[in-house]
Image (cartoon, rainbow, N blue to C red; front, side, top):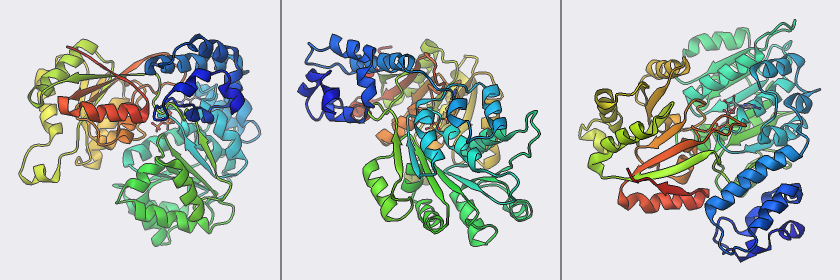
Length: 473
Ligand SMILES: Nc1ncnc2c1ncn2[C@@H]1O[C@H](COP(=O)(O)OP(=O)(O)OP(=O)(O)O)[C@@H](O)[C@H]1O
């Protein structure tokens, strides 16, 4: 570590509370500091005692891309060869996944050794493909049993993961037995799934916790045959009061299975050292669990530009309209806060309804206006997402239900019509944009805030190490 800091002596002058204190650099791979571009970039700022946040971010962005060019890049095929079946490798290349993202490069070799893993990397960094490729390396399609279970917090994320798994497993020209994937999600018809699980168990099960636990309690299937259990958005599952009890029970049951491997994934794992410690203590993971932490000092993707506009409660709708007109997004998600119980009780309309009505009468742009919120029935929720995925630009008004895991790569703008409740929520909402790996395209996160909320946003900026620029309309 000392040799790494030789290149950045000025960093020692930064106050300890700063997000750029040298201690934070301990997570960077040492080879990174020895690259020519890193030396050049860090040297050029060595006179300055005041590190501008944006300048450091830009420097890192440049260093990251330069150092990527300097090292000989292994392809995904080269990393997976000998582990993942040929027809899957062929399929990923057909889809266009040739180079690995950072988390794929770092985590796949560890996953292939059979060790438990925590995949901790930015939103949109390709964690789904990471754990799916590993699952395909383990599955024996000849065996009639559930061999991998992926637990997700919402039906929408479950549908998306199922779709990706099926797309990879789809038979190509190769003469191979397909690998079946079942979605066991809240709101589905469990009776049909019960018979299917018993008669012809799928190799991969993508499930929400409640539905999965129901099947386990009714002895419709057992965990014994499961080789790998993935918990996607693991911090959300643990923080959700409705789901945490079942999640703990599931992990405890799985801990007694032979030949088990447990994988956790998320872009945010608050207090991750405690989390890892707890997992080992509770035997939810083995002692040699690996925490693969990519972009540890920059949790927010650098392709996102953050802005805020000051407004009054009474002119928020007009301000949003002005932003939509000036920015002309290709596709956008507008996040609105959940309606409080108190507001429901007195019979107020939810903010989502009011905003939808406003946009339908006032917005003259070409984007299709759609709604996604928890109170809608499952069919309407699915219909909204299907419509979005059929192509064409969209303006999706949503609560935090769309904040986790949903992958709509065409999203160029995020509007926080209401500020999220926590910095973690901000990270996941913002991360619905900028989801095309290896792309140079910048996306916008715009916050509509009242003056008294400025300090809240400032707190998120400090915690997540990004900077937000004021926009005067
Ligand atoms: N190697 C790759 N090359 C190109 N694109 C990729 C690659 N791996 C994944 N992607 C694409 O990147 C996008 C984001 O991937 P994914 O949904 O897995 O992100 P994530 O890390 O799970 O994000 P989040 O934390 O927000 O859930 C997807 O559209 C996926 O198809």
